[in-house]
Image (cartoon, rainbow, N blue to C red; front, side):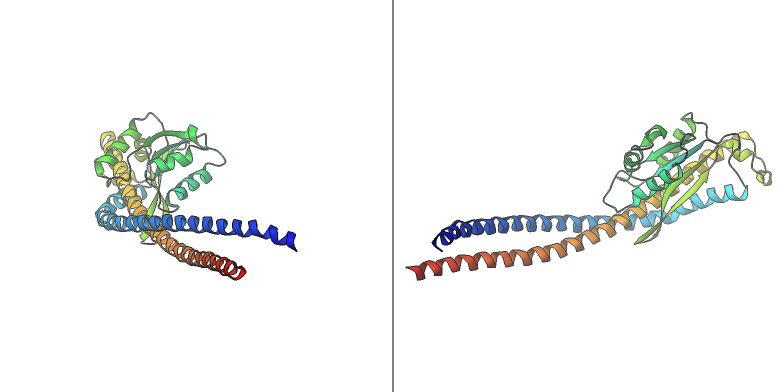
Length: 289
């Protein structure tokens, strides 16, 4: 009995030290989670303001995409059979913390090129798509457009990207832009918009319906329609990105609040246990005297 009693003395001392260390660790964790909650709430407010602006700018940009897509549909423009090569434009941005809005585009491209990627080239708009696609499709990426998402996209930015596509030297028979289309504040859809070179437009089945079309007019319209599609998809992607980030930050703030409640409860229980242990030791010592 005496031997067992002597062994209990250091154990109680270690339990007290262990309890104090746990109490300090919980306090540090609680403080860090509160700081994270402040950051996520601030990011949510910033995203809400940017989302309101992006939604306002999206409405006048939609006719650009609708007009260009309607021309390809009405003229029944198709990909050239003698040119099986394809150019894929992944429309993302440089900023994260917005859920899986960028990874959905990359997963879709990887699934399409899973069997054969030798006849496809990829143009990445934004650093997020390049970082994910470079792991498996690095040889297919011909260029990457940076500084996307920091400022609202303009038609001049889209025109520069369209000029690069036409002057990059890659001879493609068809192309498509993969982007996220804004649906509601809490949802978006993954969409594709096709585009074609001037030779494919000239070979359209119903292109003769339009009057006064020559090679120069078709080339000019092809350049303008490609810039219009890029401008439209970048506006749609920016609006969907801000709404997704706003939702993600709101969920993060709620999760941080739940974690704060649990850590506060654990902190109070641990503190009460430490105080109770100290009182027991004081009372036991006074009773022993």
